[in-house]
Length: 388
Ligand SMILES: [Zn+2]
Image (tube, rainbow, N blue to C red; front, side, top):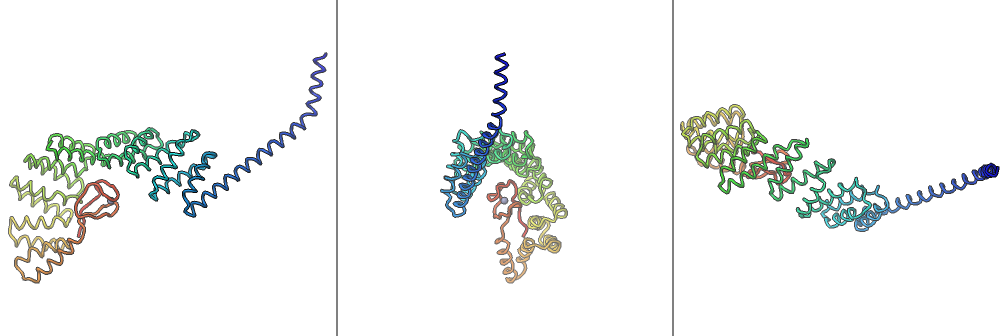
């Protein structure tokens, strides 16, 4: 009976209490919403203040605000990262490093941002020239699938700068096995660098192994064929050298001018200049490569006399007029004709020598000597002989 009374009393209380509780809950929720809005408003003011500092070029003050902001609201981290990028691009590496180290030091840094901040800091180190520190950070994030290709590119760039070709090969192979974009052309260049190193130390056997490896990785690697030809020439095996140099026609005809002299030398040493001339004339017909004209002219002159050379050259100049051919033509004629032609020859020579001989296909960088790695855009094998 007592129990029954208790229950009935509680039910009665509940009837009266419910509206009161509802009312109190309403007030509580409203206050919470108001507080939150107030907080967001404060964030927005700080945020805009930070942006204002940025616009007024007061980046130090902006840096302080964004670092504070990020602590209370990680959603502003993108702005902080953008600020870091601005610092790095402006060459203010110390500020970029301070910002990124600050972010990393916060225990509350959400796990999903950690790799992004690490990559950003590693890029700062890279730009500052602290390659060892950069390398160890990139290695930390290399396992993070989302950052695979970015970390890989940065690591490869570090190894290229440090000329640590074996490390570069390992990274390239590792990422290629994970289905990254084909890195075979780049990997082949790394093998060529290694091959060249041992070639210069007179270790022809190892140089051959490495250059062959380069060709296995990328059958179109002109540099590897050239290295193998150089090794064969050093050993006096000219027939073998000729075979490697012929490959360049298939690999990249634009780079053929790089090997033409070695090819003639090899044919000369096998007493087969006839074959050299017919091979080069055949190429000339096929590709109309003006850089071949002077070599063919000189070979024709050597073997069949000046008259035949002149006839070939006149045809070549008319077929594809170029300063190079004209210059060759004038040079050939000066042995017979007067001083006036000499003058023209000098002028034309001056024009052709003013022009750069090689140009990067990717970025347009020009140079007088051929290099395999473009110093401007860091593209491998992008420098090709320029037609004048
Ligand atoms: Zn370039």
